[in-house]
Length: 587
Image 1 (tube, one colour):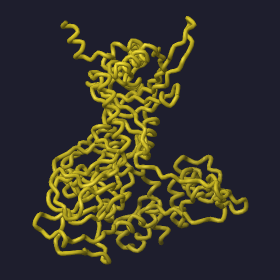
Image 2 (cartoon, rainbow, N blue to C red; image 1 turned 60 degrees about the vertical axis):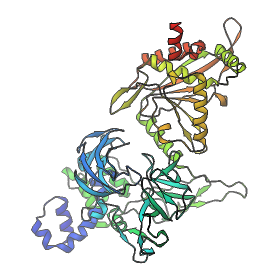
Image 3 (cartoon, rainbow, N blue to C red; image 1 turned 180 degrees about the vertical axis):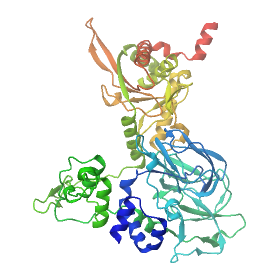
Image 4 (cartoon, rainbow, N blue to C red; image 1 turned 30 degrees about the vertical axis):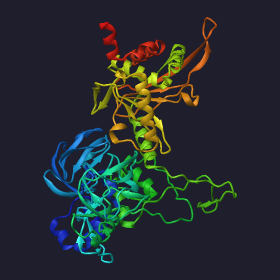
């Protein structure tokens, strides 16, 4: 009977009446369908309710601005969300196709972190996206919680206002509480800094928008990996007994078991030998992928297609009938490990004492950098152009300024020159957003600065209108705060163009990866002595432009580099600001 039911369902031939009469068999079928669902549908990327303000715990979806099937690019607004403060736009940082909207417009009180939609990559069949378990709302709203009976509310009788870990950057999912500036019993007013929090970008101050008394700190200094939305403290109103505050009980998710049931079972138990892989030539791509995943010999399955051809349904039926599980790939030894020839298992061979490896955990910033640079390099068509400039006059001018008591660096001249070149060549001063080239009105230069946590790019705004010494003092101040993790969000996010200078490390030439949505980055090498055609030595500096070939043409890139070369080789013009030129003309 079970065999008949499974085969009938595979071919879509059961009536609702028959299924009602065989409830106990349909339960078995449901478990089997969970086991094989990943092959029938496309695995979707989850879009969850974001935290759009520091105090937001839930929100209302006012209106979806994208519909199912629409192509989405980084920076697109998916929907409008009403937070506890205002109606804000939810911009995605991913790209793909919006496959399924799970929470419709006008939906209210959606908790932060709840699943609201699914995306798939371009080219995938968005109509066949794999849906969460439709039999339980807990899988869709993954943040539904229940109070653990063993951990009820404790403490006093005064209910407190919850302070939760805020989202201080668009990509922040968790953070580290560095230091609390308030202690229990302190009065708190709107705008007060409660604590410093290290995000995936920098150390930022958490300012409260509420007033009252800080009653209890639940997560103290140096608490790491605190997820956005986690409870970190409690406040009470003025006049209330803060020492008698009630601490909410710890919560646990009720969806964990449901998620375990709904996920495809993968056999991860140790096995005595490597998995036998068969020949899978001659099968269709869909059949071959399933056979390879389960390490099945296709010759053992009877095909139901024309001339006995093996179909996808035949393989799925065979898997369900034999209760098979996915086979893990053959293990590949890591450094310091040796595979056993007899069993195929891997045995860890410890290195000699004193020569062991040290694992250094990645900081949130380095993980974010790795993700963004990988996306940039794989999705943006990088093109490159290089120019060499004679910087003898620039070095001489810098030396003269130093004698006059004005200390500036070669990099300060480069920032000014790049900003002026961008204004003269506006086609290079652009962003690529939503498959459109957006020209930038100001020359805001992002300067790569190395910190212990990774690279960060503080911004010199309107650099073309600033004096060289003004640029110098501003970049020193920004770089100093960047190394301490004290930059504000607007001081390192944005910018129209980036400069990465490794000349001080004696790197003569290199190429850099574009920081989207910017379309260009200039890699500066060190000045090096060469012998000119006249037999005299001169200092040459190499600058390599990496540019997005979708937005910037070869001719525009060449014009920019030629303009930059002229400015660097005639540095006296860089000492003039727009205002200085006007005064000179009037005289």
